[in-house]
Image (cartoon, rainbow, N blue to C red):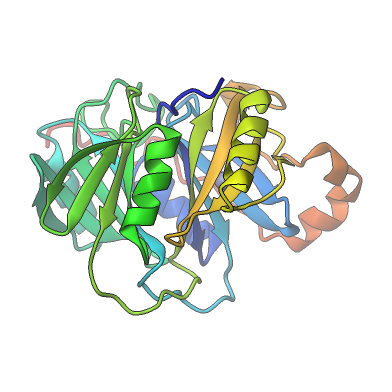
Length: 318
Ligand code: ZN
């Protein structure tokens, strides 16, 4: 039997330069690089996974670097922002930290939350929301624990048809949680990464490119349920892919009628199946079927250097 999703599994964005992406997400936002692998659809490109120290589900934000692609255009249908949770009371710290690194952040509020909105080097819109979330922060990161990111808070979507998107969210187990202006909130029942906000507003057509969020993935317990979801969406004439083996999880992709790409991903086998968690992200991991081409793949990918782990951690007085 199908069960409601507890929330978001991961969010995936298309970015430009891989090193700039790594420097920003690790060095500035203090996420840990938890997996350095390649895009399964194009093994000559990186797929970088970021998260808390353990890469727990609901903390994972992944990026496809496409250094030579043109920038995307915001519009609909599209996921327009990814928000991360930070502890209540830490937004002043974050505004200063971002400003010190030349990033302008705008203070916004909605529902009963305060947030900072800014862009990463690729132009991807990110937010830090003051919302206590029971996620262990990355203990080895550059941001003091009491301010560090507590995983994903949620995403904002701008669908062509918010009612259609809402209906699919409802099917997956998200519940209507209120409206604020043209923003309608849906929430899953888990303890983290539970928010999907739908915007109902005029916008030009989106174009996918550097700076676009590619998809949001929600958690499904296992492959049996993935098969059931597949059949359910097909019965309803919703555009659904076959089930794919993504090595760390199995997944299917739903282009819901409001135009947003939603992935359904299993909770296992998880990111630790091919790597010691202590050294995760330090070297390139390939899916088993690409291992025979390792030398060629490594020769094509730009080298990446992790930012110094503790740089900036000393300023724990702000
Ligand atoms: Zn995905």
